[in-house]
Image (cartoon, rainbow, N blue to C red):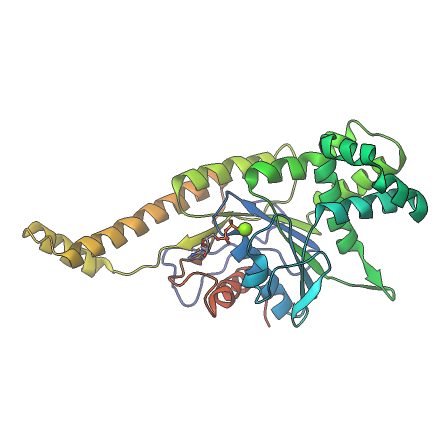
Length: 331
Ligand SMILES: Nc1ncnc2c1ncn2[C@@H]1O[C@H](COP(=O)(O)OP(=O)(O)O)[C@@H](O)[C@H]1O
Ligand SMILES: [Mg+2]
């Protein structure tokens, strides 16, 4: 296990995940948490739950949606806009808009509003901006850096910025951008911004990248590759993986033995078929947890499959409680 994750593991008192020892997520002092993973694995649900967990522990949180998804409704708000709005005590949320990010960047670099406005209004600049490799990624990161560093009356505005990042395929170029672009731009204001972003992203005391997966083979395989890429060549602080939607344990050993007996006596009752399906589903999911643990040499943090989904009342709160426990946060 890497040195920035706590080596102290705790067993869940409730024992709801048999055999599973949740790893701890270092969230108590982090300033930027980036949540990514394969499409549809629950990134938005986990982002919402992380934001709630940290805000619940008394820190001021900004939850940011980078690509349009369901983050707003998961936080009990409507569609999110470009300006952060309060969605719960100590919790604000916003959607990162490309145009806003571009304007923010140009103004930050040029510092002269007039000049910046003129440049932004020119069509040739907009065409160039859309075509420049790595520029959209840089704009996103620059905007995030702005929120992390934002201060009002000498006090930081957000203790933590949690980002619902794009799916793996887009998050990799996003997180690699400072490095890729840094080799092209060594001097000047852009190089300075890149250096500040890179310093933030690679600082394990400030940043944490959370990879979400479901306990399914394809998603797990993608998680392992992404984890290796991000933690290896890119040198980013990557948290223990978060396995979302783990099927609950429905049957004990005795039930299993009873089921096998009934099946052996020729029973093909619909209930038996359903029970066998549940057992197999959970067995396969636990197999994926083991594969993940073996590949990454650390146990995952698991979140339960919620029958009504995280959108139902209490869904995000349930996931938030489990994440708070894994992070050692208390309300
Ligand atoms: N723990 C869970 N249990 C049951 N369903 C879930 C869980 N987490 C997410 N889902 C469902 O999975 C789908 C994808 O979730 P979402 O958070 O939007 O994923 P992503 O942001 O990765 O695309 C949604 O329909 C959501 O209701
Ligand atoms: Mg999403």
